[in-house]
Image 1 (cartoon, protein in one colour):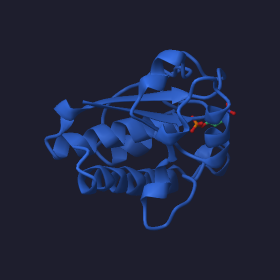
Image 2 (spheres, helix red, strand yellow; image 1 turned 60 degrees about the horizontal axis):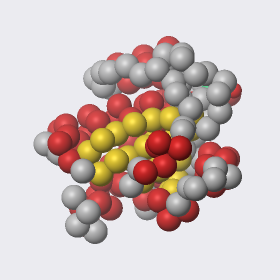
Image 3 (cartoon, protein in one colour; image 1 turned 45 degrees about the vertical axis):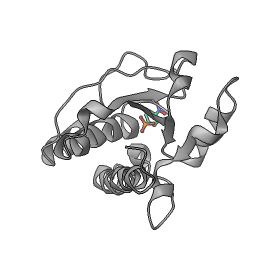
Image 4 (cartoon, rainbow, N blue to C red; image 1 turned 135 degrees about the horizontal axis):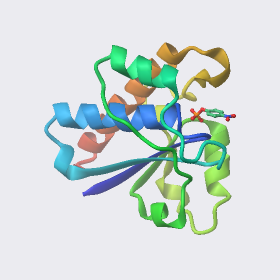
Length: 151
Ligand code: 4NP
């Protein structure tokens, strides 16, 4: 069983999108039983809030269902096998946490052929671009696990 924790600033847009997209991909690959998949925030801004409505409608448009309530990352989550962040700010924030294993922390889109940050839709309102970046990252991450015989 691999524990995967997706992380962004608020846990209402990018990381819950990643959680639900990755769950959809592993379901389609009949690999659900091999994973525990979570998403968390680096900040406390949105704790207790549901997925932002434009992130939610973008997922629905792509036939991805599910809900999430925002939670901040805690020490309990640090036993994840992979902590997959959305951008460099998230990466720097996670590395400030006492006890985090740097070797487990990656930017999601660094598994793609075009390493980059996931486009932040909060200010641009471009949730489709974020969706495409996250889908690319999640697909490439699963391929990485297969290539390295981790699943
Ligand atoms: P997320 O988006 O980190 O992808 O969930 C944001 C959510 C809230 C804020 C910024 C980004 N905020 O500043 O409150």
